[in-house]
Image (cartoon, rainbow, N blue to C red; front, side, top):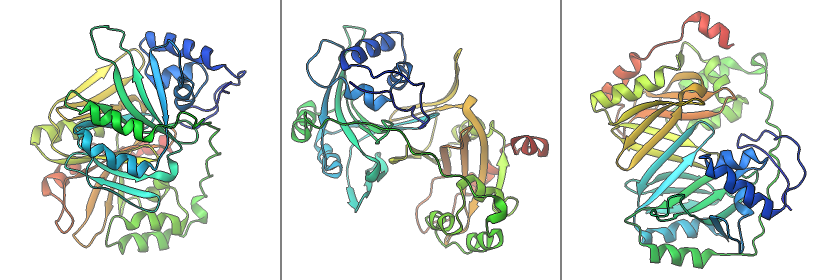
Length: 379
């Protein structure tokens, strides 16, 4: 029996009686047959995606087959180099980042890891990696081969990272990785997310000290330590330095940024995080396609080796942020959803020791800024 838990944002779903694994498999298959994504199919039956996937372990006749895995997750990712090209997928509630390449130069210091391949560029937070599965799913089209992937979830059943085979993947090497890390008796259980920490009132924050520390930054990586020191949430910190180091843009700034980067041939960096992984694309973007459906509006990057899918209807706020560094100011454009979750960050492509591209600064300067009445409404 598996109890209903939470949505992928960590909010409790409607209370429901525990569902037996055979019933989960039948209901999940029916939801997937209607075209729902796996996450949406799981939530439609009152489960997190991780809980729904876990219910498919063992012998049964449904299209989704699952083998539980057990780490070390670092060693598992290092073993993937032998598999050749794979597709890395990291997502949050409103954004999906897909990058194809080889998992190389994977290492870790304690629970924090990094992958620095030519195409697969990841920051890994293994403390959030609670469960892993090898997943095979039959296609509705019998002419198509099954989808094969490795999927990793946090303790609340939210996906932190997924890895899919591609046509060029060495499937024998992939099978060897699955066999090496398979643990059918893992028995993963998922729980509810803890309540989010309340944001401190602005009046309780040393705003002058925050601005002074911000202005003294020599590296963008100092930002996290500064927010911890002053006890500020990310968007709150932007608000407290607004007009000096941060400015608000309109939600339309995100598709405008991608369109103009494509027209200019400007290499950019696109960061998308799941809580357990940050996935990065560095390079140009070319094929930008909007897509409106009855239930969502998307802006998509559909390039060979890199796909981005961002729900523009979920964008509640966009900030242009400047951080001083030893190499000069580094500018980011950051999009947030209505729950305050960071959907994506965009930078100009750059290397340490090199100044920011002037073309990126010029592009950002052209982005539409939020009007004062829009700012007041958002507040």
